[in-house]
Image (cartoon, rainbow, N blue to C red; front, top):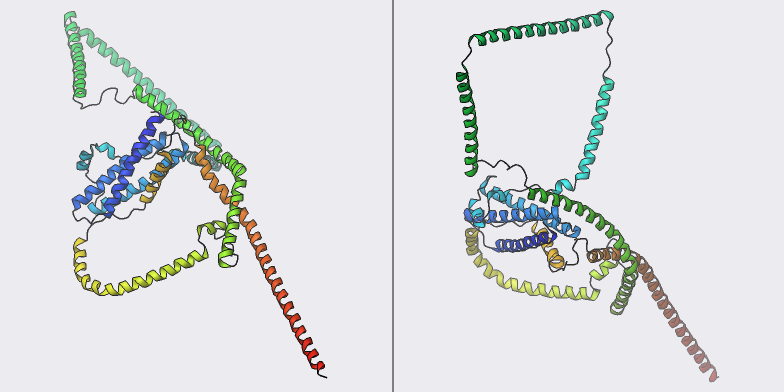
Length: 485
């Protein structure tokens, strides 16, 4: 299959997954079910559909050569496998058995029993191939060392002259006995041949009788061979026996296997290029966009200083690195906004308490009737899944990034540099943010010191002026007293 065929298959699989996630939401919001047949049908339908999506995704992950697409497919595969296990557990709890009969659902979905088989993902082995090879090498080394130690431990036993002579005599007598037995067997065979030759010479047949005997044996052999051939052809025609070349792969299958191996080689090449691009594009983003990012961060933080100074009358405290630094500043709100929200929440609580006090009496009367109704409504409901969030995340990334992307120019299906830059831009921004935080902490410290110094100078100036006024008043009083004298 080509890249276009696999991309088309990927689109169709995500459409099926999108429709299935919608059905999951509707089933979770539905009323509880009490009929076990309907419950089992719901579970088996979801199970079979997830198995079909899993089979498609597994083949896509094995053959798609685009490194970024493969990462999204891997993420979705993990979620699908977890969801399949959850549904299987629900089916076992419902039926109290690990073997289920899904013939009706398979017939409705127009599938065969082979479609229910869950293959072992091929990337389980491929992704860990290096680890497995290293493990085999370690085991081979350990075994070789153990055999060497065993050979070293085995010591040679020393024999005396009499024991050695006795062993040689035993082996020599055994050899002579074997030769004697072989010689006697040859003599008996020759005697038997002479006896059979004398018997044949006595009972010779006429040529016509010998010819008829040979004909009878040959015709029986040839007819049995023809009958066996006709029987096999009939069984093949009735599809009771596989054809003769059934086990041998056809030319189309051999060509498909060859193409699959070539695509695996291309996968490895694209993966190496992708890993190199991660490093080079990050350095490129740091060199080109790093200064601009630093300037924007400095301006934003300084503007935040000024706004807090204007609204609260003092400079704010800079968050620590453990709390996120300047990232916590832009994630959080201003102090006045927080106070306004708290006041609004308190007002809402007061209004809610008043409404609750009025409705408590009415609710107490209706509780008994509702309890009886709830007992009647109790039934089976789908348990919340731990893997639907993973599936929804993978589906959303596909819809946002890949669904409407034009890939006509990317015929070899290599990595997209723009997506790498978007991811690396965030990493570079975090690295630059750490440096900016250190600078702005020092700048904020200097600003606070400067403000405190200004306040101190203003206070001193005010005290000096007050002292001078007091002295002038005293002098005037002294002049007034001496004038009358």
